[in-house]
Length: 385
Image (cartoon, rainbow, N blue to C red; front, side, top):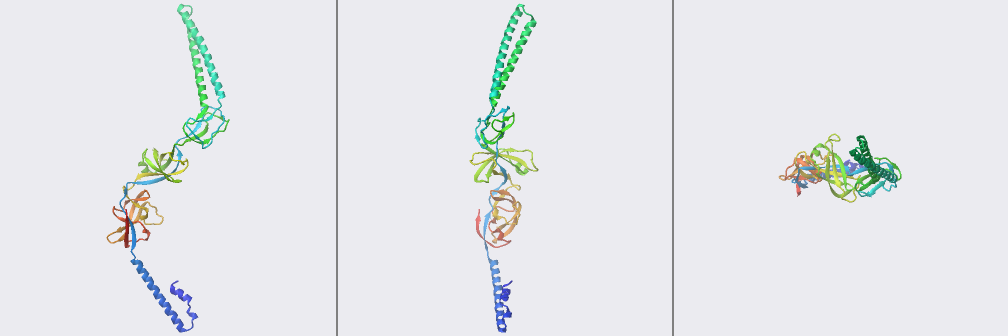
């Protein structure tokens, strides 16, 4: 409803029966209408003549690489499921999940009593075998002397030699049993192969365990690994040993550097090649399972590009910052701006890498771009290098 309509709605002519009173109301209404039209024309004229101040960004900085970020998770670099090499009954198990251990620490033990008995029995068998070898050795020497003198037959000598060789073989077998029993006694203790943290304990005190049965899981504390997949173009630019940036969303104050450890030769999914990054655990507070983000530098698809802030891009609804976009370029000859299409090759350090559409030295609007229009007159405020 216009101002004039609202006036008539409020001041109905039906309430004023006198003609002169009605004429006065009409004149007032016409005057108000003329005044309002004049104001609107003046406001429109004022808006057309306003020269907007313009902040710009000067095109100078270049980059040949863009940064791609890949979310992943911290995982232990070394994780082992430990087991005994022999079967037996456990003694007291005092390990707890999350417990820190050092390399060589005794984690669990199997009851050594039966193993000690087996070792003693094997050692006794060796002594018995030594006695048999000694008797056979004496008989062999006697038969050898008698054969030389002609008081013994060759068959008797050969039998004596066979007995000696058999006794020696039995002694060697008994010695091997001693070595095995001694090794089993040593294997009754499960030692930590490296320093780390107990991830899981799978057995209870005094329980029976089989050879090869997992009893505890241990992971290292000195380093972490992060696994993720990258597209072919990015994968071809990577190399083993390359340094990459690692960010921890839960610890935004940290700036970490990891190293590419592995590059898979075969894609695990369609156009997705596996990458493994290793990170040394030199910062307190890092734990396996924390969310991370790995930043990789890869070449721009369209070659080198000019870096510009995100604020120069003209908003275009839900369109993302990939492929093409638009900016307003300042023309110093006539102090106007013109809209121009650009090609975006990627993002680096919170800036867009523009591979085409801009030239070095040009000035692009860097603030209030949504209020600009083609050919609009502007007043340059500051050129931001």
